[in-house]
Image (cartoon, rainbow, N blue to C red; front, side, top):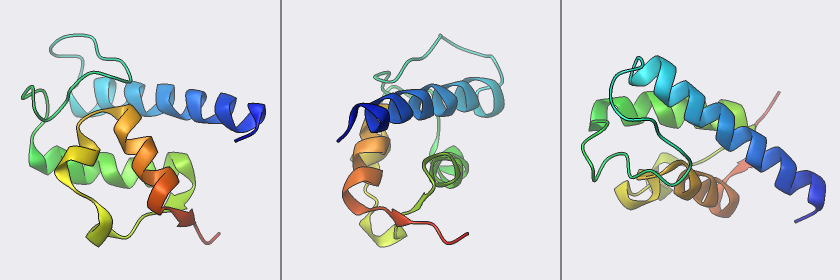
Length: 93
């Protein structure tokens, strides 16, 4: 991974973290960061994961087959981006 890619992923993680905090959690609850457990802590439910998964793909610009997604891969923003890196394919524009 190049330095530019690391910077981009860091910025993308911040975008998704902000999205979750502002749009999904609507400012309620504790402040979150890239490593905050989201599902296992009860901060978000399984219905919110679908919305987050769709936004993750938009921000990352990659499509991930739903069959490859496991709950453990969606527990934190950092884990989500690791899953995208592993299974994601460039999104068609």
